[in-house]
Amino acid sequence: MLAAGAAAAAVPAGDPLAQAEAALARGDGIAAEAAVNRALEAGLPRNEAAALAGEAELLQGELSEARRWLGPGDFAPRTRQRGFHALARLAMAEGDLAAATRAFDRALASGQGSAALWVDIGRMRYRAGQHHLALAAAARAIELDPNEPLALEFTAQLTRDAVGVVAALPWFERAVERAPGDVDLLGEYAATLGEAGRNADMLRVVRRMVELEPRHPRAYYLQAVLAARAGLDDLATRLLARTQGAYDHMPAGQMLAGILELKAGNAALAIDHFDRLVRRQPDNPGAALLLGRALLAHGEGNEVVARFAPAAQRADAPPYLLTLVGRAYEQLGRRREAAGYLDRAAREWHTAIGVLPLTGSDSEVPRLRRLLAERRNGEARALVAQLARRHPGSVDVEIVGGDVALLTGDPGRALATYRRAAQVRRDFALVERMVAAQRLLGRDDAAMAQIAGYLAQNPRSAAASALLGRMLAERGDWPRASALLGHANRLRAGDVRLLADLAATELALGDIPAARATAGRAHALQRANGRVATLLAHIDRAGDGDGQAARALARR
Image (cartoon, rainbow, N blue to C red; front, side, top):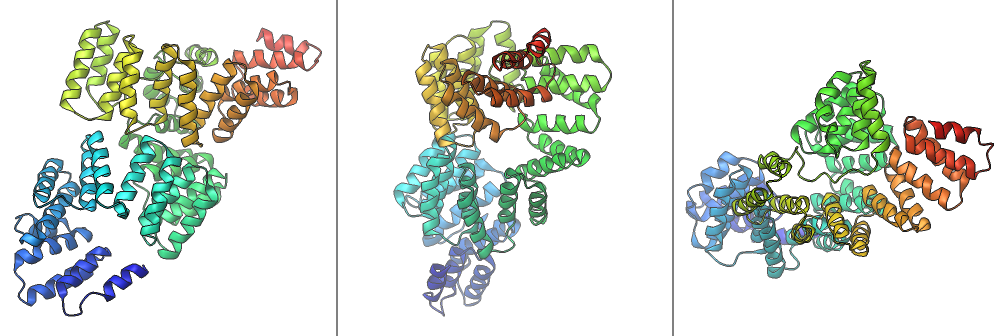
């Protein structure tokens, strides 16, 4: 803020054009528009003012007015690059990526471009599915100006996706050092600190956001997230209300609001939040399962069956989904159907990786599934190659290509394809695929290193902690396995399989009281689970029980 004030003070008082540029630099579109109007009244030609006027309207969200200034593309030579850059931003705001590409090309025709220009090119490329080209644009922006906050922030965001939250933090810190008053940047930094498990630092940054802009909704949303993670649901609800509805139509806000309503026993309100979220993000399996849980809690078992029974019939259906559908059939009084799903949930602990999800947005995915089911592997590979030509540089297509290679018995090719995709987006679903490919190649040590590296970068990943814990348990490394499974359980309470795995490690370590308590929690959640019953029987025997409980549990 002090830097912006100093820059404004340096602007000549009688130069409205310079005043407009200074106002745009500090993000004040209204002041920039007023300065441009003064320049026009003083006789400035329209093409000298067009770029600045259009940018001022963009800042105010007045897209039609911005197009009136920018659309003709009539800019004086000294403002030509700035004008076409603003026109490209306008096209992006209107969702016309092809027009944005043309405008960016014309902007670059006037020179190599600024770091800010290359950041916007990178963001446009990412939205267009040209993910690898987006990385190149970010690198070009840093090369042009390694101190540009926009370039540092964009690089931080890409690093967070490609490497992990821990690696992204230094980039965010450099950006914040150079733009300490940028509240939106501080919000990105705070959210990343939270994902890294640095809650105290996150809270410090959020409080700084409130100092700078007391009514900024993201400051209160981030505090609500912190409160919810700490189990302070009432406080989280009050903080979310202080966003004044700013997150009502955003996926993150709908998810948090739905969870809070569900935990408060307001199933109908939770359904409303989750249903809107699922409509917006049909390929979000977590949101879909939460919707199913809310529907079941509201007594709408028939809706749960209608929505989720087809997915539960798949061989790779997770135990939670099977349990959800089974309970829905129970609610409807159809106990025979319920028993089938609940029995599967009780025994199907190791499910297949959900490659080629049917909920994906690409219409070719169901076709690929049909080809693979019919063992028409050559046609499936040809279709993937066609998709790659149609969408060059797309991570989504690369992942689909890796899935096809994995499912057609070529884990080496799958791993190479996944690795290329991971240069842009290394989420847990992709890491899990890479681990599977490594293990199929007989590289168990490399698989463990893969998941350990991901967990080091994303310490709040319950799924990664659980997977690595299970892999260590397979090797008999019970102390480390127990620590990792315990960490995963703290992050994701109420997971029956996770509780059973943790109890097994505690039993192996000889901690009978802890094993009995952990297995007891699993048994309370899923009494029909055969593995949990067997585990409790083993614990009873190991604890020098009278054997009666062990025999009863073993019979169950």
